[in-house]
Image (cartoon, rainbow, N blue to C red; front, side, top):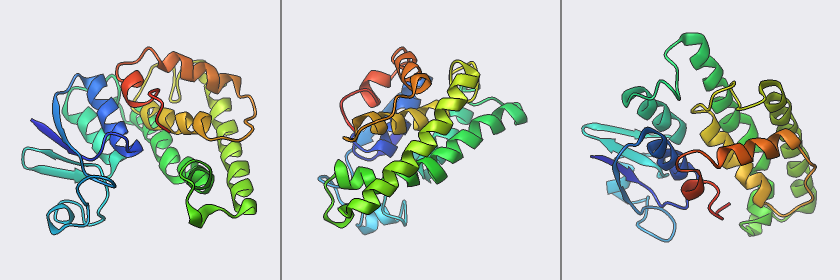
Length: 207
């Protein structure tokens, strides 16, 4: 039985949970992280030296980093419909997964922490404004891509890339500031409501 270590409210844990729903994959989950068992214990650090969730245990396999985990699960458990074996098609999925982690996430971090988490360390108005501007620029890139595909981020079919992207889009809609209208992004988010796991792990009221 696959084991997932991490609280269900974590955006990165939710990537893994949604992927399991798409793969119809059974698992057991343990609450770790803020408000639950500490990830700074020797027990947890022996699994992930970064002290972050999620961690998965799959038999003798232990993995951390959410995007690595979802790639592994799709490749291991008959997820070619999400993560194609063809090198070019897989690369098109990978580039959007990597863009989400390296570019999109970094753009919204300060604004989200300041406006939603109310972090005392993220209350400089000019920095929040800069983060919103950068976030908006990246969302415009996403809107243009979705207008080009007319469907999902890597093409006409839902793919593994849509899981991390959708969770970031959910944060976009859930962060309180004046949002420009991106019609392709809005249409995309509505299409995602039909996916297994979306309502439980993304469109569930959690930012």
